[in-house]
Image 1 (cartoon, rainbow, N blue to C red):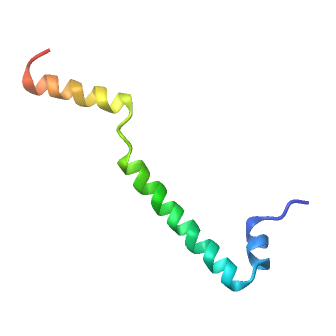
Image 2: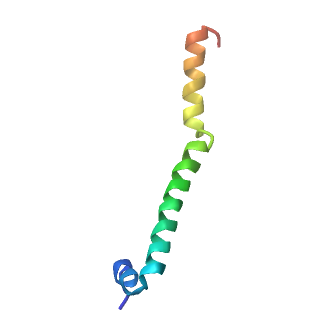
Image 3: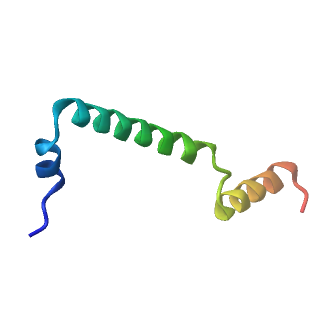
Length: 59
């Protein structure tokens, strides 16, 4: 039977568990930063272009 993550973590020594939890926190933070830094997707760019056209009055 497969063990759950909580069971596996509980079996680890405290130092190892702390290191894993700290790294998991870093990865969550890095993921958030990467998503913010990624260029916008095509629909967002098209929406921005459409808004710019309306503001400038040019096609």
